[in-house]
Length: 493
Image (cartoon, rainbow, N blue to C red; front, top):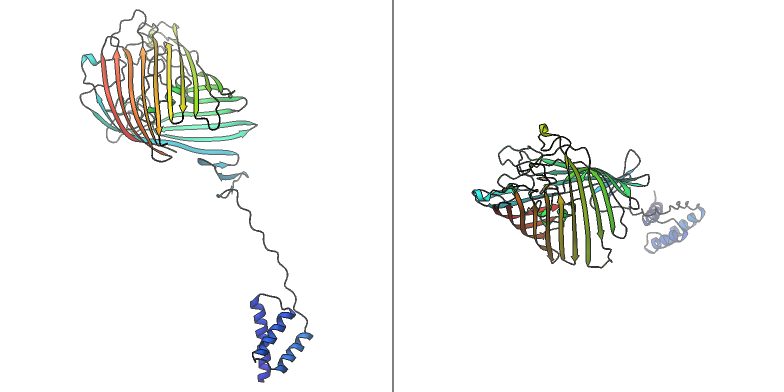
């Protein structure tokens, strides 16, 4: 092969490689430019240059490559978490807020709370003058220390929400596990048992379904907190702490807070209830509830246990409408409860003859006002055969006569720097003697004052410190006092 032929073959290869590496079609202008450059560099002679030009002119031009349209940029996903198809054709998506997910047309969410406190209780030394039947102040020969739950046990909630046939449907399960060992005699929150190899309790206190709509109101069927006394405990600042710590020497899974020291415990009651839609801030409710026995809590009272009629509770609440930037908030409420307390007879352990009864009733009323970082709560109740501490506890005398009762608490709070909240409250629950009754050791008043500090460490974690002084007074003049110091934390998620 001659050098001339070799140079022409090499030149053709160079031209093709240059065109390919440039990523461009073999147009006439491109080829001519390359041949001219090869001529100028001395790679081609003039004769070779002319021959290649002539050959190029007689060859068919190479086919143009097909035009491929650029792929459109993918649309951004609606969520940072990809949707996962389910077998039913729905999708699983992360919720916009909270802990949970959307599964098809159902919202599944989880929430809860955990708390733990170091509690030191200083009781009165036991003497005959310190005995108060039904009193909530502790007596003992030495201080007691405990690491325990406060007024709340732990809490884990599961909620399901959906819309069916134009109705909002909700299902709620609330599990309340405790920290401390309990005896289980009387339930998950029974007296404590601070011994090795013990177990705590789980109080399954909530399970209900709601059906309704914003324009027709909501029906509830299941077990949930009652109307009467409900706002009292939910607005009590010791709900997130300890308050009065009866039984601290052998702690159960709950303390008292202000239960029996300003209000009667609302309790978690099986119910079929209805709450109306809001009309300019006004809502109403009514329900039939599981009737309760009249309980001999103090040892100085009667038992009535024939429950042939439901317990009835009603509510009325008003929230002042306010503007977007309005610092002032106001809520008012009142609740009513009534139940026939009937006897199964002396043979069943009841005081009255078979079929005899007393009607217990109670009404409460309260207000909560907020102005910026300041908050004020005022609450009170009155009743006949409603009892004290728990619903229908010590409601009737040993002879079956009705006892009146009443109580109240006032509370103020102020939050500094949106983090540190100082709270203080005073409350009292009073139980009268029945007509003609002489029971000097029976509780007359349970009262306490409490002070607390809460610091918001994070959006979930709050640090708590409290001091509570509790006093129990009997009708005959006996009196017992105790002091409780608390430090710990509560976490909501």
